Image (cartoon, rainbow, N blue to C red):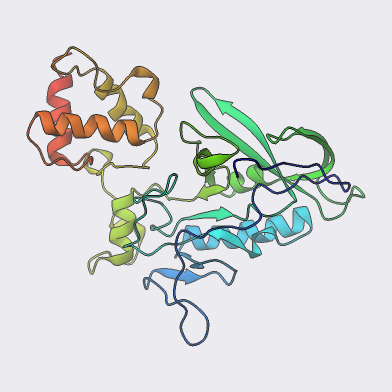
Length: 310
């Protein structure tokens, strides 16, 4: 990846971001060739993926709808193969860009195939966060599919033709993209931090709630059975959203023994990354709590007590 040349081809496509995908997790198939379902609350999605399952309900139904919408809109089955979908609950990795509290374990996320030359990705920063929008070059360039646009791809080329806005379609069906991690880059180790390929439909469940629904004996038959108020949710690495932003804001207002904030203000971005995790661990160590980098009841109460003084 470090010296990859993103050539513009004669047909108007750009050389793919990668030639092959290194799957972070590959499930072992049964005799039928279909991997064993990791939970009774998972649905086989009938696609090419290392573990082709999603959680029952909105994620599984939403993926089917998205796949059909892309076929109808772009003229080809872009989601017949994905780079990643579900992961085993015990999977762990030290690889850059692979989170151990990943939504893939929750059965409500997928990473699309980055080897496709139909992909055009444009930069779309929002505040302090870096997002990307994905367009797909339509199978027919006669005006019967997509819309005619000129796009500046992040690989440095400008392309024109009939394209389908994959991101807009996904978001209409409640699939959400996520921001890139700090330190992302087109080449080298920073590529895995870009995350433009990742979409998730969480139904508002935290990581722990989703895992409870999938794997606990008392998980219930509906996601409603495992929902907890935001104040009771455990927060950890790779979690995102308003609860994380609120946590980060409070960490930025707490000072250590040297008078320095535990978290710089520029890190208040709603993404529980390594910097936030380190800040939490430092706080836990100072006040003699279990140093696990997770914000559960004890750590949350400590943070609330400390920020109540400010």
